Image (tube, rainbow, N blue to C red; front, side, top):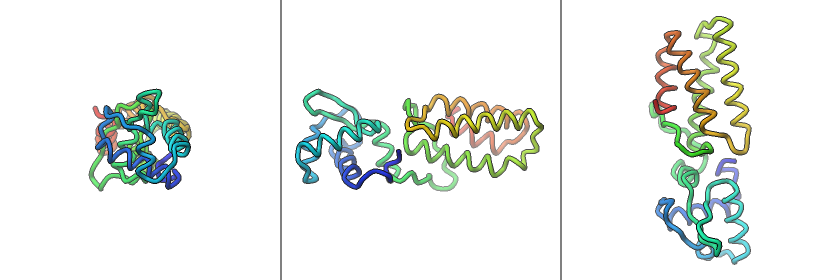
Length: 182
């Protein structure tokens, strides 16, 4: 789920948590204080926090209501919360989070769109095309998951990068290398 598809109350809570922690995942704050800052009662604060914990935007720090923002939560806020792609020419490397962050999702979707648009121009033989399609299908399956695994997507992108490089498609290889952090 992307932050833009969250309810406004969830986005407000996440933004307040980000502001209070200054984006530092090691800082712990009370979910009730965060809720109080945006005029929520304790029950609603707890419900919103649970929703965000389930989406990996918030981490539980203590059993008494202490929470912290997760790396995915930081990425969601810093990307504008809407999965907007980075400025033209900027290729962010995938994070090391277990689950793809919102920023990662945007970058992966961007490179996949590029590969699909350019595939015909790559002049791939049947075997190479079958390999490309298999990797793209695996990535598509991960992207349709509620918890897409960074390692699976990275492995597929590295496989595609090796294929593109071996076949002399330097631009595609370069973009994929930048994204996978190689």
